[in-house]
Image (cartoon, rainbow, N blue to C red; front, side):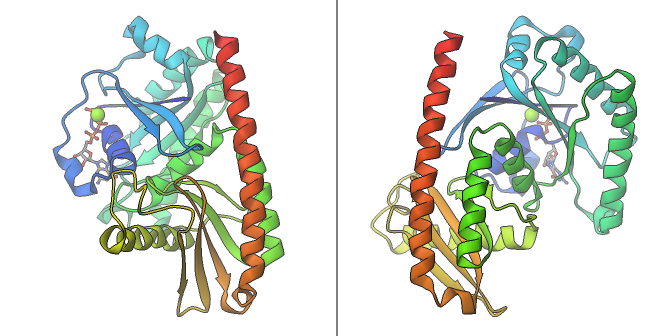
Length: 324
Ligand SMILES: Nc1nc2c(ncn2[C@@H]2O[C@H](COP(=O)(O)OP(=O)(O)OP(=O)(O)O)[C@@H](O)[C@H]2O)c(=O)[nH]1
Ligand SMILES: [Mg+2]
C-alpha cells in the first residue's frame, strides 16, 4: 500500500512524516531541509501497519511529472494533500489540488484523496471557530471546483504537528486503505457492549497511531489518555525492564498489561493484542470490578483479530499474485 504526500513547498509534508513515524520532536522540524526528490518511507511496525509513504518535493508539478513520479501516483491507494492553513489565500494551492485530482483520476480512478489543512496552531488558531472557519472555507472552494469538473469530493482534516491532531488524521487515513478495519471495529463494538467499556482503541505501539476503534466518535482527550498510557508502559519497561531494542521487542510482549485509575472515576486498562499492538480502553471504575470478564472478552477479541489478520494476509498475497 502506497500513500503519496503532496503539497506546495514548506507546507510541512516531511515534518508530518518525521513526527509521526520517526519520533522527531516537533521543534526539531524547524531544521528539516527541503525535499528534492520523492523520498520513500517504509512503515512495517506490526502486521496491521504496513505501507510505504512517498514524500514528494514541494516543487512537484503535475504538468511536468516524470515517468517515475507517474508510476508512484499510479500505485498509490491514497494521496494526502497538505495545505498550509497559515498561508492565506488558499485559492492557488487548491487550484493545484483540483488539477492534481483530475489528472490522477484519469490513470488511478480508485485513489482516495485526503486534504490536511495543516499548521492549525499558534495564536491565529486558539479559537475553535477560527479552525472551523478554515475548514469550511477550504471545503467550499474545493466542493465548487470538484462539482464543476465532476470529480469526487475529498475528505478534510485539521492538523498540527504540535498536538495529537496529526496522529488522529493519519490514523484515519491509514484505516481507510487497510482491509479488515470494519471487521475489527465490529469486534470492538461487541467487546465494548459485553464489558461496558466507555471507549476502546487498538494502537500501533511504535507510532501510537490507532489502527481501529469502536464506532463511537473519537475525542482527542480519550485518545491522548490512551496514547499517553502506552508511553508510560514502554518507558517503565525500557528503564526497569529486561532490556531494550529499537523495536521495543523486549519492552512490550504478550505479558504486557497495565491498569491506571484516574481521579475522574475511570480506569485505563492496557493489554497486548498482537506483536506490537496494544488494546487500551477506558472503563468506569464500577464496571472494572468485573475485571476477569473483561480479560475473557479481550482474549476472544484477540482470536477474532488474528483471524482477520490471517484473512488479510491471504488477500494481500492473492492481490500480489494477480499483479504478477
Ligand atoms: N507551526 C507549524 N509549523 C509546522 C508544522 N508542520 C511543519 N511546520 C514547519 O514548516 C516548515 C517546513 O516543513 P517541511 O516539513 O520541510 O515542509 P515540506 O512541505 O516538506 O517542504 P518541501 O520539502 O520544501 O516541499 C518547518 O519549519 C516546520 O517546522 C505545524 O504543524 N505547525
Ligand atoms: Mg519535504
